[in-house]
Picture 1 (cartoon, rainbow, N blue to C red):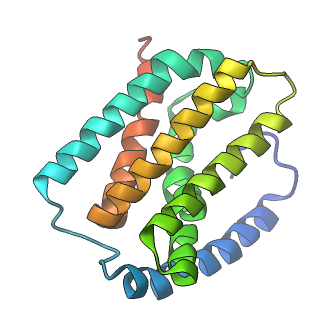
Picture 2: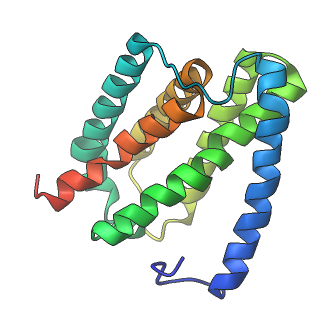
Length: 193
């Protein structure tokens, strides 16, 4: 929070809101995930093929973002791109601790409890990701091209499906690994690649 230059509120207020929201969202995950998916939340022994597949998907998505989408998106959302290593670490920690909780873990547990169907819960995750992308795109001060919006939408839909698929087969640790690989693309920028 201290590295967030354009904070609209005091740090303690934002931290308390995030703590309360995080507590409720983690309660959803711990209460409903295992009961309704019949799969463990934390998987320590991930099958090597699934781990290799997640690693490959993470690297391909990261490189696709780095070379195809990030150069076009950077002018629209410069705050999404960490300028240095301390900001990158803060970005990764926030992604792993809250973004995935808000966009994947908690809504999936809620949708599983509501629909009791993995396909419907996956579609809820896809719809939520597209909704957040639409809100973010409409809040941009600069208009984005239709082709860029379509590419972002396709990437968001694919990322949501892959995220749920790996989350169900490898638990939270594999979902975190996938997110870490995708966020590691910013290290290529720091290295000048």
